[in-house]
Length: 261
Figure 1 (tube, rainbow, N blue to C red):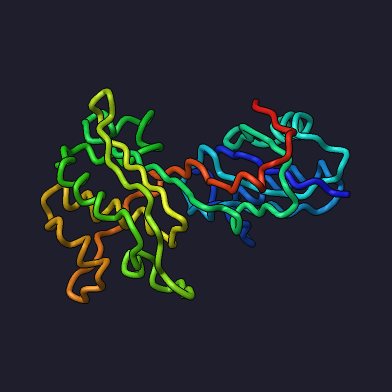
Figure 2: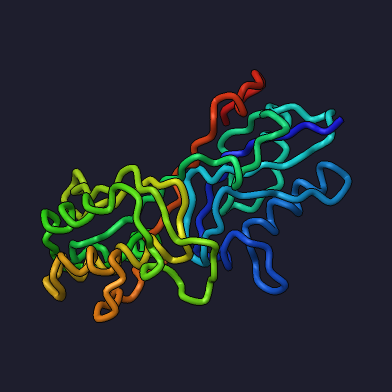
């Protein structure tokens, strides 16, 4: 009988065309499924907690997969990491309930956005992993604007328009801007039950324009109220965005086998 495993995956998204498998282009799902299928001696499908875009990174993307019973969590962790490319790594493997599905079972997801505001953000050692804005912003106003996101809202105006869904409501549990300890920029953290396509990047792009004084802080509220006279700012660059973690109900994690790398 197969075992269901939850993997916590980290990757540098710079050389990937996103998470989701595609007919052409290198993807995270494609690389992981290639390795898992080799280990299982059959085709394996990997289900991710989120479908990250090209260039987006991850620190703990939840992924579930079914593998033959001969595999346990410690052996799987070692074997997968021995075969994955250098820009992708499993940091934790855990056997979980057969009912846990990485996307459908997630109760919340957290993203982080990295914004560089100092001149050195243009450094080649930094610009691949943050938005090299290299300009100061009004973080107090941005933080006040982000706080208004908490609660349930319709984010239709802050998502890609050509992706029809049954509804566009998301429940935001937390949304904060924090100054980096070294003063080189800021982090934006947001946790919600679900996210729409480009939603975080559109939020960040709009809030940065507010922080630069290019538009009033009230614009974000007007977008959430579907004011037709207000448009979003261009989405923030993909390289600053990180999928941090997905939360799952404890009863679906109630299998004792777990190992950390």
